[in-house]
View 1 (cartoon, rainbow, N blue to C red):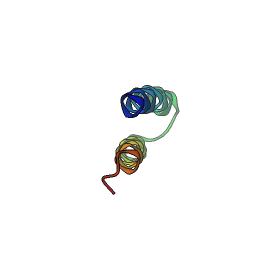
View 2 (view 1 turned 90 degrees about the vertical axis):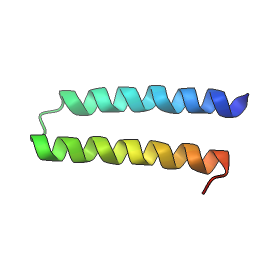
View 3 (view 1 turned 135 degrees about the vertical axis):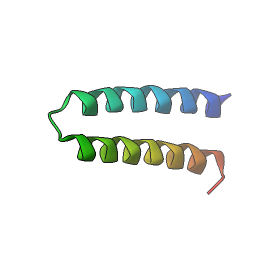
View 4 (view 1 turned 180 degrees about the vertical axis):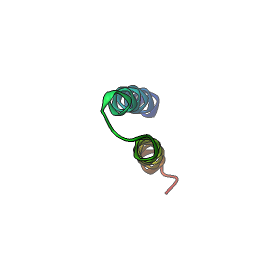
Amino acid sequence: MSILIFIIVVIVLLALALWAVQKLPIPSPLNWIVQVLLIVVAIFVIGQRAGLF
């Protein structure tokens, strides 16, 4: 049950971070790169906690 709550918290924080990056005045290619990096980090954190990595 705690891993499910952890995943929900990470996804909510990821959504907030992605929203903040979209609102920043960053040029378009760099904006997409930052968003992809945030998603990869979130997947890695969830996988690390779940014992996949």
